[in-house]
Length: 69
View 1 (cartoon, rainbow, N blue to C red):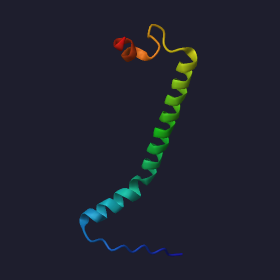
View 2 (tube, one colour):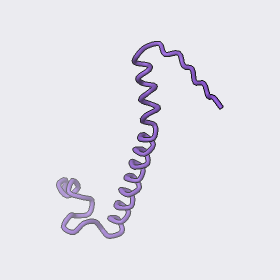
View 3 (cartoon, rainbow, N blue to C red):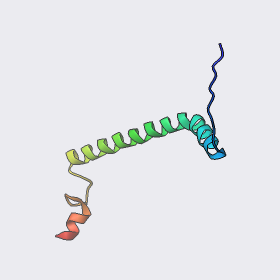
View 4 (cartoon, one colour):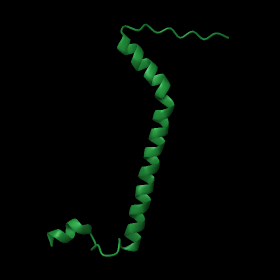
């Protein structure tokens, strides 16, 4: 079985962008998964802080709210 991918490359830059997209596609997917995992972890921490009442020694609403008082 032969697969033939013929692409007309108009410049070296186009060829480099194509090669980069093929070579880094898996890494980009992993980076997106890592970023989403970080977002979910931050949301879990924020929810836990709200349930616990926040860290000890910091007024409710955080230091910025305390400075406005």
